[in-house]
Image (tube, rainbow over all chains, first blue to last red; front, top):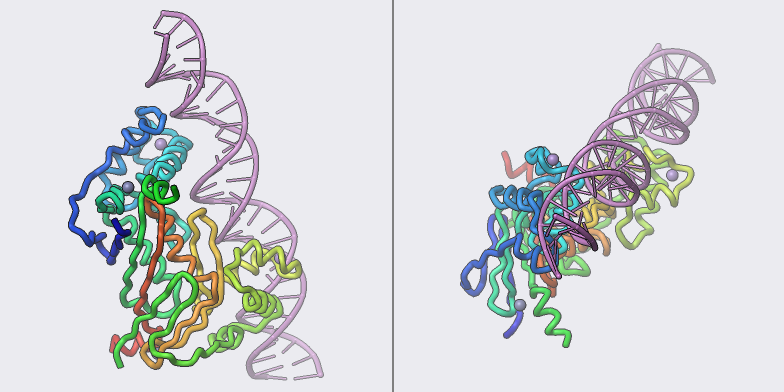
Length: 153
Length: 153
DNA sequence: TCAAATGATGATACTCCATATCACTAGAAG
DNA sequence: CTTCTAGTGATATGGAGTATCATCATTTGA
Ligand SMILES: [Mn+2]
Ligand SMILES: [Mn+2]
Ligand SMILES: [Zn+2]
Ligand SMILES: [Zn+2]
């Protein structure tokens, strides 16, 4: 099977092959990699899942008084490493985090990003240029980590 | 005249209409807006012009011992406001700065970015997604500030 | 030409985000 | 249970960027 393109407009990710969206269990993804399903992690994941836009680490921390600051940052880093969360660097220097529900592109692709997460990236690209941005369009060609590994064999 | 697209691959910006690259005098751009052409500003601009990639503020500061830290940040901010420098937020949280030599898209477009500046933006977009990025393509549609203002009339 | 006015500079202090430390807690395994 | 260790949270620390302010430089125009 060939690699497939993912088109990203300024609102939502659009699949090119119409395959069904297949959400990922974030906590399960952690456990599968040998991490523990702790209460703070569940709280952070739950908060990210109910959000409909990217969140700053500080916003997460403030909304979860029972979870320590350090744990918020640690958990975000962990979720980034596992790949179930996206980091969006904003032009003002702040960073937003949001869910990444991904299924491989080689084995039946659909990659879906919550509104307000990856779609901020093109906005950042616009802001990095002179003049007034009118429109933008980004295409990413990707594989999942597993299939990329297969490809290397 | 219609708006025109600017295609950005992962190396260089490609103009779609073949118009000639028209560099901008950065210091002149400052003076035209009522700022002064001081020695520290000339030094920073000269350093940015001879660089062939994006630079961090700290790198600029360290390479210019005669220029104070605060002035480096102030000058960068000023160059950003004037629009002759691009800010590229990197995935690791650092920021790179590089020249933006721009000519309007409506009145005869060519926008050229130094290698290593805007072309980092698609890389950041890649890094913000799960899995392995294979390729990317970004198109920006823009106008200059002046023509955008005309459009609003 | 010279003096007043204002813009710009640089040392320093400070703020804010993120990380490192470390004693302690709680989940996993037997 | 008991043991073992990953994980937690309070705190200290680090680093990037900003605010302050006394001093300096450039402009203006008398
Ligand atoms: Mn908290
Ligand atoms: Mn310096
Ligand atoms: Zn796959
Ligand atoms: Zn124009």
